[in-house]
Length: 92
Image (tube, rainbow, N blue to C red; front, side):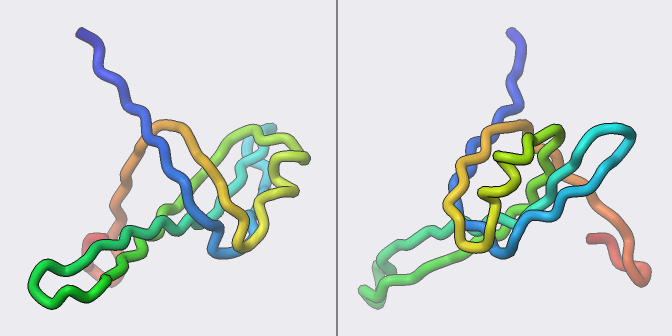
């Protein structure tokens, strides 16, 4: 059975998208915020958690990138890829 790597994320842009050229293609990067709300069972208070996602999109049209402005609601469908790096001897 083949496995599928597909992610669907819907949220709001934290700032305007940035587009650059890389190897003859365009690469657009932006940060996307998703929120989750729940009621705490013990206190009865509503709580909220915001998760930030770093999105990198290849070969978007000018029309698509023009709508990627701060606060815009965006639906992203694509593959999930995680990376790590080392900064000041600390793995992140």
